[in-house]
Picture 1: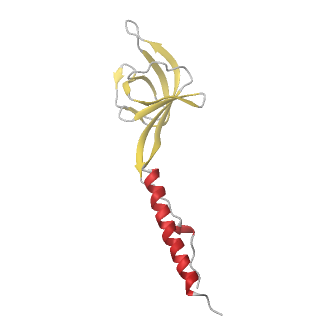
Picture 2: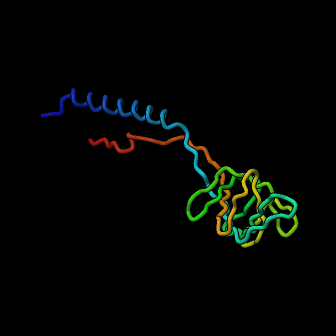
Picture 3: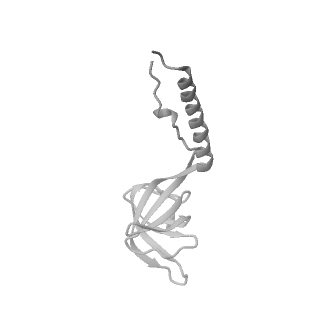
Length: 144
């Protein structure tokens, strides 16, 4: 007693339908964005500049290189307070710098955000766009 051809046809229809469903899921899902953290700094002290209404976070870089080019977010007690920030000023002592390596102290201020507090963590990140990968077919095994 062999396997009827009718059943094989249903299996192929099922695989075809899974392929259509897979395409629909990918279409609805769209491209995905991932945030890759490249640097972290902990705010050790807040400095208010005289004559300016500007707060500077005196910080220590604990991971990677904190730089002006990447977006940043401020994390307070495990919660993201503000995201998508750009560094307006990054200083080592009185000198403007483009980046500060791990273990070094620096002064950081942001464009349009002054609510930095002692103990906050500044995370510098890059957004990476990735097309979705989704496959029903990966779980289908053909047997002889």
